Image 1: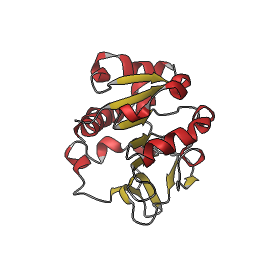
Image 2: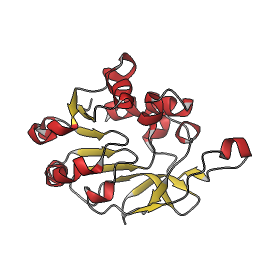
Image 3: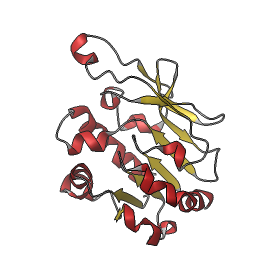
Image 4: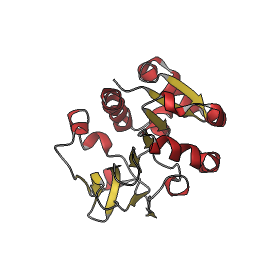
Length: 199
């Protein structure tokens, strides 16, 4: 069972997602992001960087994250955290966000890229479908889990860019769960966090 540290920026949506009883037991430690410099990440298997954590707080800790990855740790970088600025070999593309596809009868164009990945024993594609703000290039040798219309990935796993693992996503479930809207985001966390714990 993996030990997990989750970063808390002090927002209302982080409070609900991290501290309230539904998910609290999945985190061995909740670290206020401005205390990260004084935190020994080597004590954990996984560092979960919560959705919409300000990248300007993360960028000064870039070397700390790299040391953690070089030591074999796993960084899970959730959506809207500016991953290219503080993690290696991450390339992001902004795209227009379609908030109304579900009312207009359209599709986000998401598809499961690696259906035999164990994550999909915990979530379905519907659990990962609300909207997204862009997509990532997938580094050579990394594995996309959810693609967007053949253009790139909204969720991928990278075991090649560092000795550790990076799980990179454009999805922002903590923001929406913590804001009390978009039921798919709660279903996503209901499956995703037990999956992380099982690693």
